[in-house]
Length: 466
Image (cartoon, rainbow, N blue to C red; front, side, top):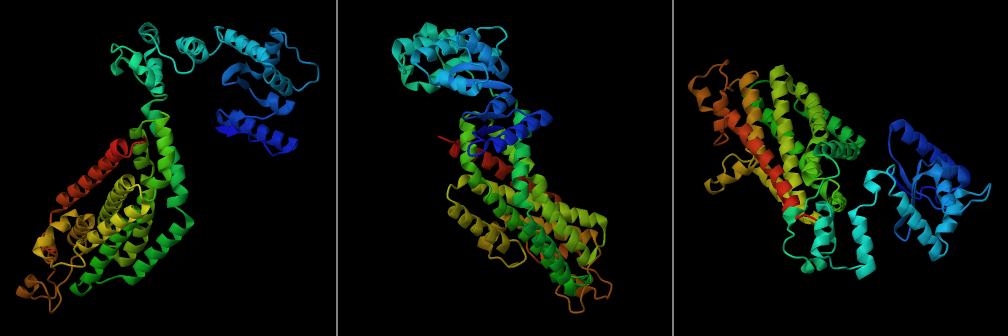
């Protein structure tokens, strides 16, 4: 946890209470808290375990807070009794240039100590900085021997930072000689980012308003299509529940995902530029971290509305739920892609509105007699495949739909009977060309993979931070 002057504006009691709370939190949770403090009291000063003093961008001291007085005493700067160490240290660092140079030189000697943290000891990078600033000023030219003597990652950092000086470096140094090491493993990045995405998205996706909306809509849909008879007269109503459910949750997930990228874009770009984590770790964490939240509300809606429609089989119930959730996740994938590709929110909303409306129109419920030159559009409709799958499951594995006396299905008129049921093929044929269950499922999974992959490609190569 990084805190920038958290005690500013607080009285001494409130400031001490805050720092004591942070101290307890760090100890109980095993966390590291880094705090910048402006003239802390002696009580607050001694609450800190480690102390880092900076002077003109250079380290004046780093180590245990309890040892800082001894450090200053070792260079002839003795603190008076009952004097606030924080005030004394600040006075010395803000003193004359000779005093500052003396303190910084002593700090450099401390860094040669074997007990000093390895990553903070003097190394070739410090040597280069000292040599170059002394000889050439802030924008130096490196000779080949000096450049080749440092670690590859340091050389890479130097070349990136001072690219204007690369013209003086011979062609013997190539990018392949340098490497960049991520600060943490892929698994650590994925785990932390998944937790962050989950915590960030939970109040937004599972807000009280969304819960009220989902429960209210589930009850309303259940009452509207309450206990429909399994007869041809109710067939259109049963299909209406299926189509409404798939389109509503498609829109809910799509526009929810659409609005998630723009607010995060600046933060993501800043963190990517700093090398904090891989884009693949972030993208995968966002997909996985928000997945349970994406599925929660559609599952609650289905749990409320479908039994009111008419619960006939646990198998049908769970299979319908699976395809409802699959359609929801596919719609979220499309939203992620459009949100990542479009920098302007208004443009992304317009594109999404056109796509989702076209998806509904060609889904197979509103229009069945589609002009032949537009039939190809239905194959781009995610709702088309999910809606067909729900019909296949409901009308083949659930209770059969009985023919009406004046049926619109030819097979019912050929063999009129009060117990004659309508085959699933006849129901689907009435809506035009259709695919089997497994083919529809494969297409939906293909939509899922393709749009998620395209979203990553856009972020990786097209919308990458400059």
